[in-house]
Image 1 (cartoon, each protein chain N blue to C red):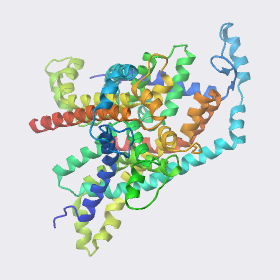
Image 2: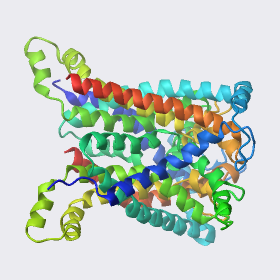
Image 3: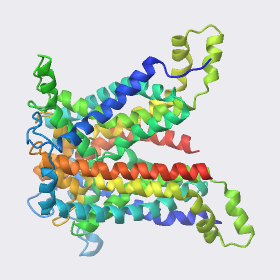
Image 4: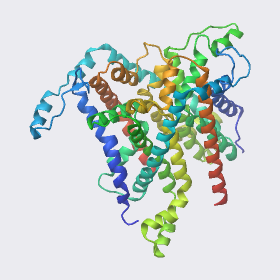
Length: 262
Length: 292
């Protein structure tokens, strides 16, 4: 008996995807609307994109966000790799429960609590809030996601390869770097991308931990969104969506090609 | 590597300093009181005279802020409505997420892969932007009412209502519900269903007696993964809800930024954390089971 998708299955998947993509599609569509009103189609126009290019504050925010994202994602990936190695290979050690608790808890912890607690830390140690406090905060939260992604791949890695390298005289750390790391590279890249995207996207933690001069793009968007719908925001959103979509699709294609060739 | 725990040192210290330790500060601050100063709370731990400052500091801590929380109805109602919003949205997510995940798992593997990608993709696009997209749909002169107007229905004023918050929660968290459900349904052995049907079970019967019970770990994972962060959600109630929409995440934000009442914000955070401790522990046990 073949059990392909029934009509009901097709309908639920179709409606589900329509629900997920409909609002995003509308947003993209209206970023090209010449009219300022959402319900009036004033013809195709790229005027909001032109307006965007003139918006210095918005461009500053984009620049801050990119720098925070690049630095925090890189730091989070390195720390996440170390944490994943610990969780997969260290077996039982004293403090393991606390360690895995600290790794998994931020995944579900409400962001408001994370933001508040980090802010109190910075206030307590007298660190002025700004670029570096946001970067450190993003590293902390995204390193947990990076760990989970890398850990999933590392758990399936055949350790005998690394052991063979060591038997052939390779020191342990360099065996890890030369044999294991290239093998789990797609997961490490995926972890970095996830960390970067999460940092790009974060509003709540950045609002708590940022200071003057380090307004990130989501903070800027949020302050405008509160004032209502604005076609310029649609234009920024469309650009962000395009960048992220391209990145994810490209990453997916690379991973597929690797899995086919290996 | 001979001593794999060595790898733990850096992430352990990092998480200890930037994740665990700050929680102690939140707990401490929830026992302080507000003052008009920078930072806006007292007592401050003063170690300039050596350790003599510690007892004086501890002596000044009090549960005054918590008493304030219990006496002001705003806190209690925002607590209850947070749980209600998260519970309702989780239930709706299960009802609409299950058929989607189940439907996906019935497609042949290459299509499945593409569908999986399609469900994950919105998760990568900005949360804020996806919520913002709903403002244009739900606002009084928005797309929903324009569409209803064509059908000579409506108008509905949904923006800034509790309904809008539930729509937003369901929309934003749908991938978090579908993915764990799909993960268990996809791995299920089809022969179990065939066996049940060979033994005289109808297709519907086989679903409820075999497929569904076997997918319960996915149901639990999806429900926890959605419920826990939704209780503390800030962006959705703030942008889609009305001024009367109370949720704990928003309360913390308002106390902190608008009222500059840091002790109250901390106390609410502690209460929220205490409430979520049980579901978070359940979630961690499940994660540990999956990774073991």
